[in-house]
Length: 190
Image (cartoon, rainbow, N blue to C red; front, side, top):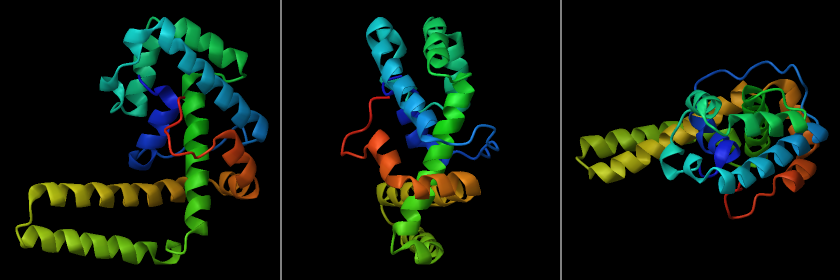
């Protein structure tokens, strides 16, 4: 998997319908540093297992990715990396990433001027898509609009699934979280 677990989680997180697990382990800066270190070490596995990191795996669900990784020849190394960073399992790694993504989504939307009008924006986009379909618009345009609509709905769903504790942690530590996971214009290599 080309960008491995971290980027998979952030790309697919808004589209995931499974509820986030109630946090056994609260988010902390130490935990996030461990997650980042784990991601960095996973990235290093690309050279050892080049066949494992192909583009075809980027569309896997998180459940499929967990099963895939557990069956892979890299799994003993993955387990060692997780253990060395104090992460109990691939599932826990994903859970923390999902919780962080949900908390970050919430913090980002709270800072957005459009947040208060988010539901209205969703409704407008849905109405626009309906009118495009009725007006016999080009299928690629409709498909693109539907994808944007689903991403917006997914982002809102993800934000709503974030626990109060995770939302508060990310909001109160936003600068530190962004320092650990900088939001440059490139996809992170985790």
